[in-house]
Image 1 (cartoon, rainbow, N blue to C red):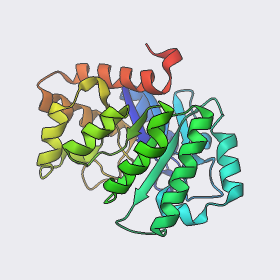
Image 2: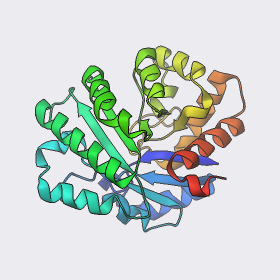
Image 3: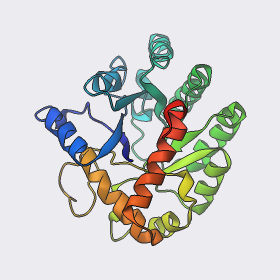
Length: 261
C-alpha cells in the first residue's frame, strides 16, 4: 500500500531515465504515484497527465503553482477547468501562497489561489496546498473560500506547526510528510508527526527535491518514499508496514474513494 502522494515526474531531472525511475518505484512496491502537474506554469498545464499516461498506476493533478501565478490568464483558467474533469486527474494542485521567493506578486498569488479553489469546487476535486511563509493568509483564504465546499485537501510537504495542523484537520485536510521528516534538525516536525492522527497522514517525496536520509544530497525519486514511511513508523513506535497500509488507505480514501481497498 506504499504510495508517493506528491512528486514532479515531468521535471527535467528525470528526462534521462524516467522509465527506469518508474521501474524502480514498481519494484519498491508502490501502489500509486501522484504526478503533480504544475509543470513550468501556463501553458504547460497538462504536465501531470502526460506522466499519468506512462503507467496505469500513475495519476495526475493540474494546477498553477504560486510561483507562476503571474502567468495565469482567462485562457489558463479555462484550460484548468477542462483538465480538472479528466478521469486520471485526482486533485487541483499544488496551489497556494509562497511569500519566501515572491516570484509572483502577493495580491496576484491570492487572486489565482481563490480562482483555483473555485475551479476545484466546481469539478468536485480536492486541493493540494503549497504554503511557504504565508500560513496566516493561506489559512484565512482556505477558511473563507474552501471550507464551505465541504471538500477535503492535502497540506503538501508539511512544515507548519501544531496550530496550522489543527486548523487544517478541522477543515478536512490531510497532512503529508516528505523527506524533511528524516532530517536530524527537524525536531518540531518529528514531534508533530508522532502525535497527529495516523488516519489523516500521507507520505510523499516531492521528487526530485528533498531526498530523505540516507539519500540526502541525491536526486529524489518515488521509490525513496519508503524512507519517509520508515521514519514515520519509527517516530510513532509502529511498523513500517502499518504506516504504509494506513497512509495508502488514506490516499485512496481521499482521492479515489470508489477504488479504496
